[in-house]
Amino acid sequence: DVAITSDGKKLAAAFNRIYFGFDTQNNPVPLFWGGIALFDTATWTKTAEVRAGDLVANMGMTPDGLSIYLAGVQSLTDQSTGNLQVFIFDMTATSILGTIRGLSLPVAFSFGSSKPAIPQFKMPEWFLF
Image (cartoon, rainbow, N blue to C red; front, side):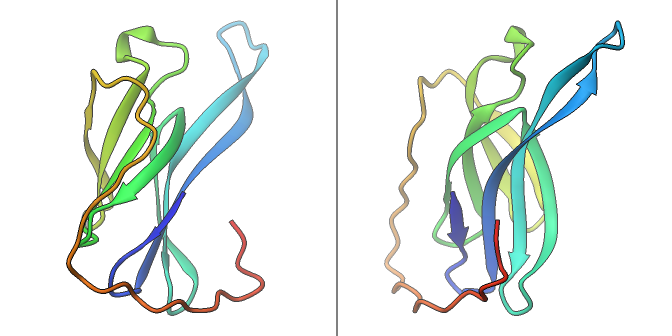
């Protein structure tokens, strides 16, 4: 998912990475890394990248652009951390504030706002996620 602040200055994108690491017996195993990347829309440069958990999915940004709610899994192997949860991301501090647990299968986030929608702008062709 992607979201943009109401002033159009920041873009947030949820992402997942899979890479290989090693287990305790030095065997190669797949590892997972999910998080949020922030971009400055004036220069299209990445300004921050924050890990939330092993896997992330849908996200929603509050109308004021200060918080992001991101569905995901903190750990795919440690069941004590709980499976599905919502990570709360602070856009100003660029950090995860905490999580909401006990929800079943969060799929979509929707926030209301009385602010007008921002105009669409063209992304450069070289800008890929």
